[in-house]
Figure 1: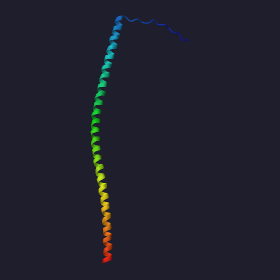
Figure 2: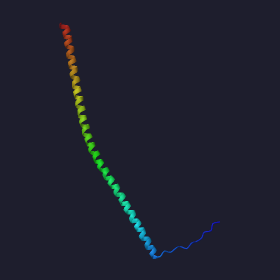
Figure 3: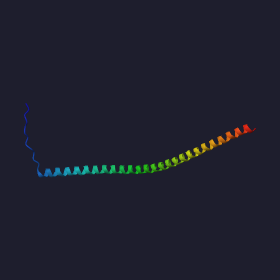
Amino acid sequence: MIVAVMVPRQTWPDERLDHFERRVEERFDNFEAKVDERFKQVDEKFDRVDERFEEVNKRFVLIEKRLDRIEDDIRELRQTMSQMGANMNRNFISLAFLIVAAVVFF
């Protein structure tokens, strides 16, 4: 069997309560200072991250410009290859006619 014993509540004098209040305030002030310092560090890290993202954005702009130039170069290359193919076909037909003409007339 468990017997509960009632202990009278301890009363604190005003001096003790005032001391407790000061200690709590001091601890919260210290805690707030630590939290403020950590947030300052986090803010500084975010600033550095923002700077790095700005650099990455600049690099992406450069890459986009390079890709645009490559796309233009590929377009020009396709046009040149198409023209070259057409020229080769004409030259092949001309050569074939010359060979036929040479065989027929000589």
